[in-house]
Image (cartoon, rainbow, N blue to C red; front, side):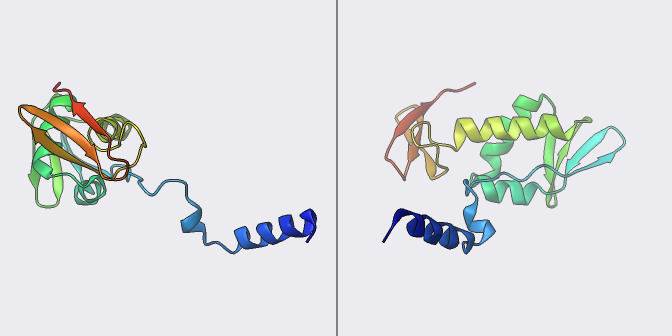
Length: 137
């Protein structure tokens, strides 16, 4: 078999792969969808974001509200924030949360769990076995 024929076969096989499989990352956080009521902001796709992050609501909300710097609560399937926010700010804060509390620092995969070892919280990766201490902010 010559090299040209081999390259053609590879190209043909690659073209047969479905588009959703070609994505480089299987961990994609959905962008926030917002609804405003007066001076308040509602994240309407909050459940979808939490499901993607695979963390408890309590953990996420505690850290997220501290970073946003406002009060908030879950109302139905939405997260209520007591102020007006742009989607770019909220998306950035969610991505920062994911980088700190979800993605492994070694292999960058989302297959992690937060465990407690003594008084320290540790991000433990089930994919590569790495353990990273979570620093309280």
